Length: 78
Image (cartoon, rainbow, N blue to C red; front, side, top):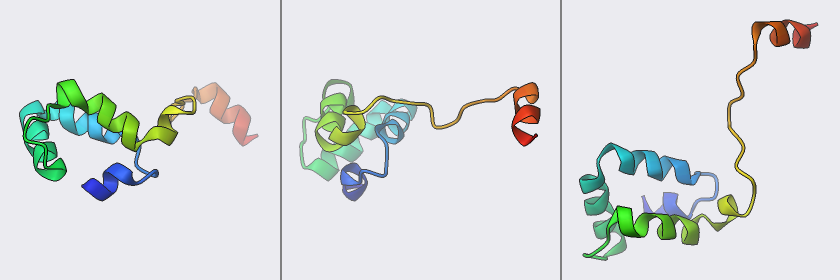
């Protein structure tokens, strides 16, 4: 997991979604990984992501998927 934290190809949203599912488990995992017994995702998570995923915060966040209407899809297909 610590390699994922440093990997620029993995966006911060992945960690946010994992933490949102169970904050208690997220705290436990990151305490162990970072060797920081007082780590709290709610308090420390955002700064952790901003430190380790700096490039993701330096550019605008665009959606990875853009829905298209049926009419637009027909137009694009020709």
